[in-house]
Amino acid sequence: MTKSTLKDNFLWGGAVAAHQLEGGYNEDGKGLSIADFMTLGSHEHPRKLTETIEEGEYYPNHKAIDFYHHYKEDIALMAQMGFKAFRTSIAWSRIFPNGDENKPNEAGLAFYDKMFDECLKYGIKPVVTLSHFEMPYNLVTNYGGWSNRKLIDFFARFAHVCFERYHNKVKYWMTFNEINNQTNYESDISVYENSGVKFKPGDNKQKMMYQAAHYELVASAQAVQIGHAIDPSMQIGCMLAFCPIYPASSRPEDVLFAKKAMDARLYFGDVHVNGAYPNWLKAYFENKKWDLDISDNDLEILKHGTVDYVAFSYYMSFTAKYTDHWDYREFSDLVKNPYVKANDWGWAIDPVGLRYALDWMTTRWHKPLFIVENGLGAYDKLTDDKKVHDDYRIEYLRSHIVEMKKAVHDDGVDLMGYLPWGCIDLVSASTGEMKKRYGFIYVDEDDYGQGSMKRYKKDSFNWYKKVIASNGENLE
Ligand code: BGP
Image (cartoon, rainbow, N blue to C red; front, side, top):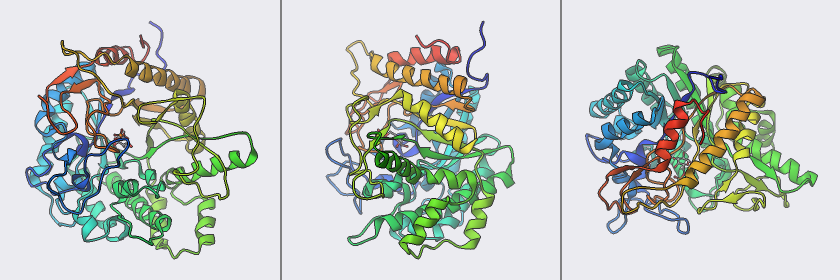
C-alpha cells in the first residue's frame, strides 16, 4: 500500500456545538443561554433576539435534536463511520447557570462526563470548544456581555472548572468559537452570538466590538495559562472563521483593500499566536483616539497565553472592492465572484479557497492547523424508503478534501485533522432552521421541532466511512 498523504494519527471526525444539538435547555439545572432567546429565522428573515421567551415565538435551540437524551445512539453512529474525533462545546450555562456563581452545577458537569466517556468507549477523542455562541443570558442582562471586564474572571472560573474536571478525558480544547466573526459588527446577530453585546441606537459599534474582543482575547490567553498549569499535555487552541477575501480586480486599491480586510478579520489570530497586537492595529487604535481599556497587565497576559494550534472553520471565500474608505464592511464592500458558485443560502463554494486558507495561515503563523468546520448546508429529501441521496454533499466534501491534501503534500501544511460541520443534522446558527442540513446523519425533524426524531444514514455516511478507513486516499 502506498503511504497516505495525511499523518497516521490524522483526526477524522465531525463537529457540532452544544446549543445547536443538545436541547434540554432547562434540564438538570441548566441556566438560559443567549441561544435560548433566538427565534426561528430564514435566509430572508433574520432570527429575532428577544428579551424574554415570548409566547407565540418558536425557539429552535430549546429542543434542537435532543442530543441530551440521544447522545449514546448518536455517538454509536459516529463510531460506525470510524470517527477518530468529535468536536462539541460545553454549554457554559449547564456548568454555571448564571455565569457568575462561585460553585458549578454538578448535574451539568456529570452530563459531559457521561458523554465524553461514551466517545472514549469507541476511541473517539473529544475536541472541545469552551464558548460557542452560548454564554449564560444573565451575563448579558446584568453585565452587558463582553463589554464588561468582569467576564474575564467568570470565564476563567468556567475554564478552570472544565480543565480540572475533564483533563484526563479531553486533550484538545479551543477557547472561543469563531471569535473573529464579530468584525462583522454591522450585524447585530454576529456580535450578540460572539459577545452577548446588544447595541443601542447611537453606539459606536466598531469601538465596542474591539473592546469586547479585547476582553475575550485576554480571557482566552488566561485560559491557556490555566489549562497548561493544570495539565501540560492538553493542547489549547484558538478558533477562527477563515474566509479568504480576494480582490475584485488587479486594481492596486482593490488588492490593498482586500489585504486590509483580511488583516481586520484575522488580527485575532495574530494576538492568539504572537501574544501581541499587530502594528497596524496599534496605529489604528491610536488614530481613532479611542479610550480603549487595554492595560499593561492585559498585554502581559496576552504574551504568556499563546495558543498551541490554530483551529478554523472554512465554508466560503469573499471578494471585496475598494470604494471610498479603508474600513472593511462586510455589508457593503463584498461583490459577487464570477468564478465560484454558491449554495442555496448564498455561501460561495470554493474548494481552492481552503488550500489558500491553509497555506496563508501556515506562512503567517507557523502553527499546526486544525479544520474544525467545513461543509455544505443544503435541503435534503428523505425518500419513502428512508434514504437521503446527498451526492451534492459528497461532491462538496470531496473537492475540499482534495485541496486540503494538496496543502499538506505540496505546501507543507502541518494539519491535525478534519472535522466537517454538523456531522449530524442540527439547528442552523445563522437562521435557526433545521432544513439547512449538513449531516451524514439525517434527523427526522422540521424547522418547528416536529417529526419522529429518528436518525437515518445518508449516502454521505457510507462515503465518509470509506474516506476515513483509507485515511483520505479513497474519495470515490
Ligand atoms: C459557523 C458556526 C457554527 C455553524 C456553522 C454553519 O459560523 O461556528 O455554529 O452553525 O457556521 O452555519 P449555519 O448554521 O448558519 O449554516
